[in-house]
Length: 313
Ligand code: UDP
Ligand code: MG
Image (cartoon, rainbow, N blue to C red; front, side):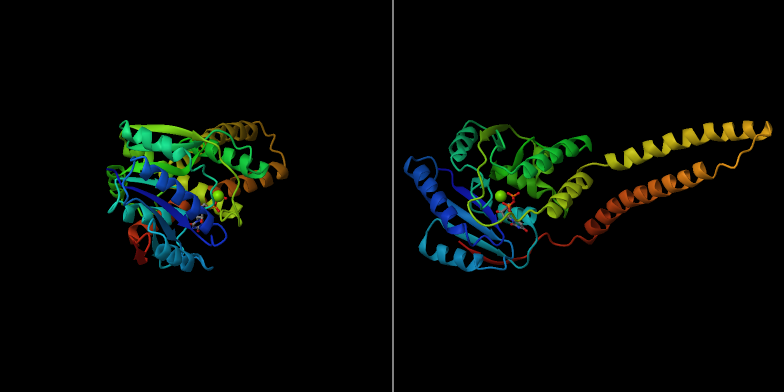
């Protein structure tokens, strides 16, 4: 029978982790009793270098609950890397791997449907939010803008899908073949291929504690996503440069004509404005190119995505 591992990255989640464990254990027992998954199935918490008691709680839970396992990262590496660490570790034990957040925002009842789809032949099943009623207006709008901008900039992601998804063992093995250090899961997973499907679910509120994704992290996340999946921003700069060059040729002709007609005027304003505009544009262009250069720099170093300090099975 298939063994299921539920991978849950946690960063400072001491307020929620016990409740999450209670609910996920119930779910696992349900599935095991119905002979859907094997008794070796587990929850796998990945402690992403938390500064609070998260890891000691995971340790306790691992002692008292046979369905709890844990991975401790040596340092805080961020949600995506913690997730990759969990997936790569879990694939050594499991046939089916589901990733979800620790805060119970993802409806765990969608797991049944995900497994059904897996049994009917899907290797990847995306959990997609059917509404965002319970998010704050700010979170909803920024998230919506995020998906729109990602798609506009050429990074194709599944709409309203966060990192709540089921992957088969071979899909995770496929993922491990992507050696780039900066792994943007939502963009890479659709590239793996295999048969995929979608399960809709209602996204709830965070059970307790605060969001670990403040605006600054979200913006960084979006920029990372765009620059690691697409070179469209550089294309846009090229386009802009070409357009400005075309305009400047027209202007050149215009200036020459005026010059030969002897009507040269003291156009201080227009010159000042164009100096600022071109200057700003150049800085922007250099910034975008620098962003990619930085990526290349980081990739060539081939640093490890994470370092595992301890595994509790
Ligand atoms: N998380 C993590 N490392 C980090 C930040 C967040 O592992 O550096 C985890 C966090 O514990 C949670 C998940 O990523 O399980 C999503 O974070 P959160 O719920 O705070 O984000 P939001 O739902 O507000 O976007
Ligand atoms: Mg959350």
